[in-house]
Length: 428
Image 1: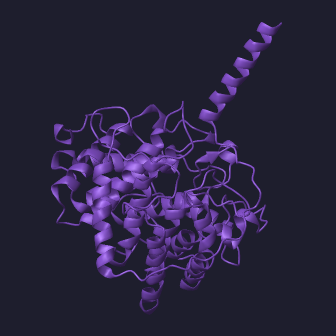
Image 2: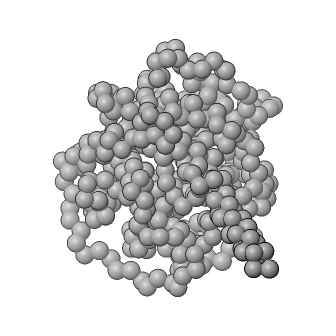
Image 3: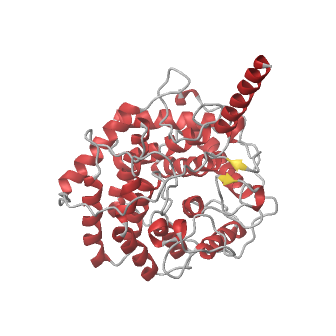
């Protein structure tokens, strides 16, 4: 009997461990955190410090490029608590690599140095190859899955490579096909019952769209349209509607868009949504569904309640009471509030920039990077997002959106296989 009980115990532990590796982590239970205090040691940041920080970020990213499964250092995998079979999922690896490579492209400009260009080219080869991973297919319908995050940011990276003129001549047709394929995948994997996207689909196709994922995905699709790609109007319009459905009159946004269940508390309180409200308002504004007044409310709320974001930076767990702010919101929020600031009237921007830079320098790591997680590897993501935020005053205006009268051809949302020929040897 004792032997039987011991065997049963082992089986139960094994099953629980396997489930933890392949499903969404459970929200840890915790008492509401005490109200945080505003920082008192903020100092003005000079322009030369910003330039030096961007150069330091370039150096850190180049030095930290790595490989999880081979000799060639070609990736910057994003690291969170989620694992698949105990490993960082391929969606996180592609998404994190794409964001860091984009930061290098934008920070380096046309006078890019050889080591930065080499790091970008290695990342380019990695992303193109790993998009063919079986776990990046469209065969997912429920549960916690981050491949859509990889699809969206891989598309953003390839669009950035093409615009910068970094795609080798012999691979241009292949990359064009990949871009069309990724647009089709995002159109195919939208949430059918509502529109929009979510990396957590506990109810399958009946799940609520995530505003956190839907807003940046829409901006990437806007950019694809600006570059001449065909993007399905219906897909975008449905996703925009989910953002509008998630909006409260006070400027807050739901985490998962569900107009039939709005409480205005926790996740949905203004303080609980300051990380996503700026990009949600910016995205709606770019599509003619918002206003500069709404963007300013989102920016003001960000600074007013910033201390709640800071309280969750570099902490364990994800969504903790009272506002359920996850640490991974921190630099995501700063990157997109920086974008929102640049859409405000020109005379208002300098003061908001000043406040943003003071806060960023307040949380800067000793080595000159930025990290919002407990994982050392996540400094790559935090540094890249901060670099993009610091570059916003000089960045091009984000692409807008207007539905076109020409209908997308039937079946355009069903992606076809890209050119099967492997990329040329110059990627190696």
